[in-house]
Structure formats: C-alpha cells, structure tokens
Amino acid sequence: MSSSMPVVIGYLPIAFAFGMTGVTHGVSPEMTIAMSAIIFAGASQFVLLAAISASTPWLWVIGLCALMDIRHLLYGSLLKAPLGNTATPRKLGIAFFLTDEVFATALIRLSAVNAADRGIWMMRMGGCSYLAWVMGTALGAYLGLQLSESIPLLAKAMPFALPALFLILVHETFKPGHRTAIIAAALTACALWAAGLSGLALLLGAFVGCVSTLWGGKDNELASE
Amino acid sequence: MSSHLNEAWVAIIAMGAVTFATRALPFVFKRNFVEGKSPGKKTPLNALGPSLLAAIAVVAIMPDLRDAAVDGVQPFASYLVSLLATLAVLRLSRSAGLALMIGVACYALCLSVAGVA
Image (spheres, each protein chain N blue to C red):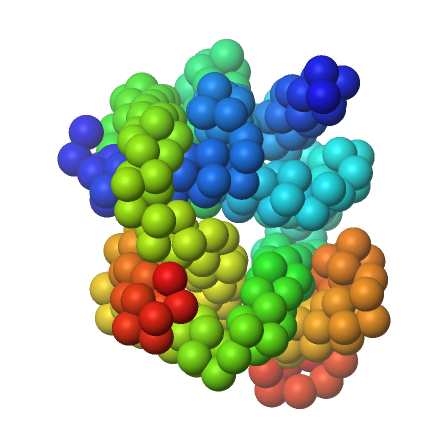
C-alpha cells in the first residue's frame, strides 16, 4: 500500500480541482464523477472539459484523446516482461489502472517485488490510486461547488487549474531530447490559434513537433544519435 | 438539451473505451507497439505525447492570456505570475498536485490583491 501513497497524495488535489472545474464549467457532478470513474486519465478528462467549454465536436475530442493515449501503448509494452507470469485477465485489470503516475511508480519499484506477487501488487497500487482519483473528484464536484458559492474568488480562480495542469504536464513529460519538438509544436499551435484555427492547432502542432525530431541539432534525440 | 447530454455520455464511454484499449492492447498482442521490430530505436512517434501536450497547453493558455490582457495590466500580470509560481513549485517540490494547488491559490491571491475579484 505504501507504494501507492505518493500517487494517492498527488492525485487527491488534482482530482478535487477536476471535480470543481467540472461543475464550474456547467457539467453535472454525476457526469464529472463518471468521467473520472470511466476514463481515469487526467489529461484526457481535462481535454474533454476544455472541449465542452469550447463546444468542440465529440469525434474530434475522442480522436484527440486517442492521439494522446498512444503513449499508453509504450507503457504496456514496457511492463509486459516484468508481469510475464501474471494471468491475462489480471493484466487487463492492471491495464485499466495504467495512468502515467501508476506506470512511473511501477517502472521504478516493480523489479523489487517477487515475480509471483507482481500482478496483485500492481492491482493494489492501481486500485488505491483509482479510488483516490474518483473520491477526490467527488469531493471537488460536491464540496467545490458549495465552496465556490460561498467564496466567489475561488470560483474565479479555479478555471486557472486547467491551463496550469497542462503546463505541469508539459514540464513533466519534458526531456532535453524533446526540446525541439516541444518548441516546434508550441510555435505551430500558437500561430494557428492566432489565425483562429484552434482545432487544427492541436493536431498540426503535434504533427510538426514529431516531424521536427528528424531535423538536426543537439536538442533533438533522433538527430543527435 | 437531452440530445446534448446523450452525446456527452457517449463521448465519455467512448473515451473510456479508447483509453482502456490503448492500455490493454500491449498485454493482448505479442507485437511490441511503438518499438516495433527494432526495440529501443527512437522514432518521431516518441515526441508525439510531449508535442501534443505542448500544443494543448498553448491553446489552453493563450485565450486566457489574451482575455486577461484585454482586462488590463493587473489581470495579465496575475496570470503570468501564477503560471511562473506553478512552475517554480513544481521544480522545487516535484509534486504536480501541490504545484497545481499553489498555482490556483497564487492566482486567487493575485486577483484579490489586484482588486479584480
């Protein structure tokens, strides 16, 4: 259980912020909690909220999240070998809990767990993280609204959680080898947003970021190989 | 309204299914996704996550910055200072949750001091 504590502590305030942001964006508490219970992917859920606010078509949003979720294919690929003795149904259960934070914790600590116990260890760690995420969302969705009614300043400040979270996620995923890609993606997205093409800004920004990795330079992990 | 709500539920369930599928597929298939036939080899796809998040951050932050600039110097400065405070706390504490909470608290404080809220 102690292995999940850092994830649980990290999740509670973000989930609370998500729950509160959801209701302040006009989404019902039930639907906000369902998003956490069914999707269990912070970035995708905040993208969905942003899309609801911007009235972005659903198919675009789902396509966008599928693009973001491509990184999960790597997570499963890397954990497949350490979880080799685990039965497939249990692996599928583990897969449901495989967020960025759960994956990162597993990658660091799984090798210290007995091979036979790794499946149940992952289920417990992922399960605790999931409960923290859903409970934090519920607290934010119900108490957050009351707080925002009694403290209007809080309601005005809470939407800041969304851009701040994306800034944090960019920082968290940053590696020196991705500097060129991140700058190229950000500049492309900024130019397209300024031109009034926000929907294209995300997709083309990501595309240009990937293509830029083929460009030379010391800050480019492909070119510097 | 009802149709809009139904669409929202469909989107949530579809997004949940897509998320679970990307997490579960590597455990179902023998093929190693992303690395393909050359394990360890870096491809442009490795930069997809960071690139997409950077693009999303720009699209999430820029409209707020523009609106804050229209409102005046103080709201604009409040927003910028709070973004920098979020990054500073993240670098010092390495805790995303703490950085988020302090960033929002800093924004609330700046708005309050500036008399915006």
